[in-house]
Image (cartoon, rainbow, N blue to C red; front, side, top):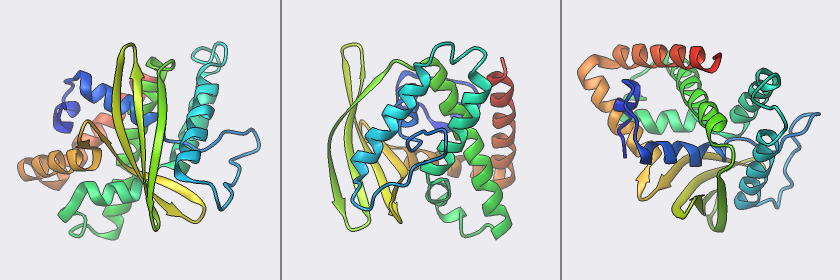
Length: 221
């Protein structure tokens, strides 16, 4: 797995790309022109995940979606990403011990910045890998948390994955993904710690600001 710190300086790797490609198919609830339909109380995590995949694939397979329609579709995807993915929970877990050291204002800003970096990465992958498929196997639920077992399919490969979600009202919000034994949150935590030790927290924020800016520029091309 290519480290997050390397990702910030421009290096890429097959497993990292697969990791992000897999995750981006689980980021939004169902799409409708009138807004997001509320999930029934009995809707399971795996049901909502499948619904998300179907909705995203529907968008990506629209004719000329990456041409004149893309600015509009990007905005829709961003809205849906914010509604499905628990960025605050992920940010807290990814920063680990450093989360408690931050002020409330710093926490809010970090969540916003981290969200920008991640969603831009996901959208970029969405544009590139719109025909990939995911199969769903099962879910294990314990109280308000669930593990969704599935596999990312690409050509002759099947890459096993687990998605961690927590129930908030009637929605299952994704806060981690494990692929081939590697946790997204755990991977970010290690790399954030490395950057903070070397460049302090301000250095991490500066790198994330720079990354988000470059991503925005690239997505406009």
